[in-house]
Length: 181
Image (cartoon, rainbow, N blue to C red):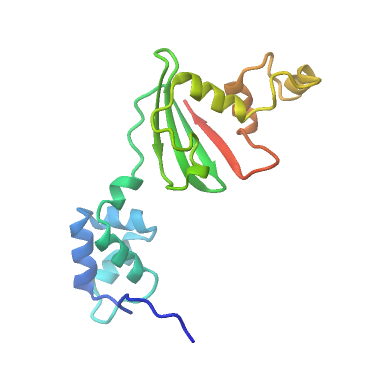
């Protein structure tokens, strides 16, 4: 038997336009958010026939959770460095760091504590940030470390420099880091 869901099978142009306006989106904003072209949004909003497909449950979700756009929005970068903690292609945590002032701010984009950079910690200290960064590198006391550093063309052990070369990838997991300066 086919699964049934408590979702309409189709939308009207007015339903779609109302959802877009409820979010305060222009057609361009909505197109960017749902990863379609502006022409697609224009076509949907001028359709005389029913709109079907994956947009239908998405509009239902957006109507039920209008704050989801704000929860997923990446804040403006205000620090000297931004680190994207990723699991495969999913953003899990964004870490904004001002090393000069030893300030760390995080933004979690998953409810899965195991996928968050700092787990349940919402306001990590600078020391916790340093520990996290070092955890994404080969151990400081590793045998033949100088050879490994030479291999990646780094003069000394520095987690940031190592991560810039290795993206903090480890053989045993799907997590990685992207550093933005």
